[in-house]
Length: 539
Image (cartoon, rainbow, N blue to C red):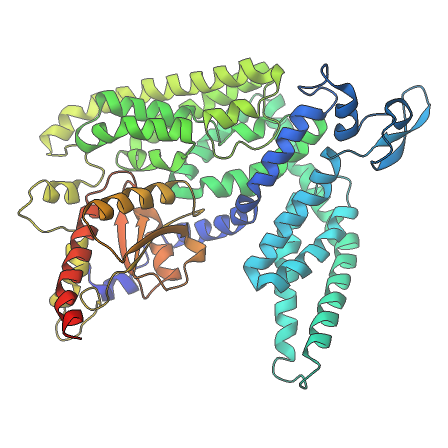
């Protein structure tokens, strides 16, 4: 059994944890602002010249889409710019919503979020000011520039504030704070205009050219060789929102759609794997797979199928081949999405598909699911006899499930946690029996999706057990502040959670939807409350 001291010194997967942490930092700048991307996607889909409303109300489309002639449409209450048609005629064209949102709103939201992550509200303000430099200094949407300047501006402000911390005379704090932030923001904005914007624009052109080269060389499907294993290692949000979304937005602005939005978000590969487990799996994996398939495909929570791949790593081949199939179909049909599909639900994917891409996108999902299902089924069938002979009933955590199947045995999940001090010689390494569990936090990469689902499952179990006074919430690992009594994470993310909240008790699970550890948590809380009830009565 792993002791508390071993837990503190052992750092398995250190490099992976660092990559996850960096990728999560990038994605956490984008994830909270996904509603703004969705709003922009709807506005684009409805009101641009080739949008859904082009034949129903041309006047509204022209005004909001930013292509209408003011002299013809007559609406004077909207901003316009001087434009020129192909014949050389100049006219006042409406600015609309589409262009300003993608040029200013979305990058500034990202910059503000990144700045707040580094230095609170003050960092968000300075980071946003600095980001205006890269926005105005470039001719392309500055999402990458915002992801650089937002945190950088906040970090610079934080370091400068430290120089005179505690040295400002009383009564001058507001004056110094406001003017220092304004001056720093101004200088950073000017520096970003002349220095950072050209570099980011050059970098964006290189990345865009690389993607175009992959498409032209018919090699884009091979991106799945990197994307699908990366997803399973919980780098999915970092890959999608940290890399593909910024590039996809630039492509969507130019052509109205981008295939990059579907490289990671296609729900087909995961859905096919879960259906294969539903038919050919064993034990808990087979029983839980149908519900997981529904949540993954309709709810868009891709993380739910990662444990099914991790329990049998060969299944990643099914994910890769399924992903390659989906990309190949989209390349063939020249299909893509107008904006990011988040979550990666089939509903979100179809809503963000332009009319010309509906067929290609639909076929890409079906094709990816079919290929991943066939390959995963072959792998599961081939290893079925060996798994049965080895006593592996297909549980997502074999050791825990085998122990828990016998109600008379203690749990290897929370048993080690609760009895941690008993196995040490002299030192009480754990506080599981001393610290009451009143605040339970489910933590995942983004703090939404899978952790919200796990929190809901445990919350219902606690309610049915009649336990009161215990809160169960969900949040991102990066936001853990050490106040949680018990933190529950998926096994691949536990090391990061321990680093963020070392004083908390930690439980690793393989599947947020159905884990034997939940019953142990309920039993632990009930036993603690029963033990403390007499003490409370005496007081």
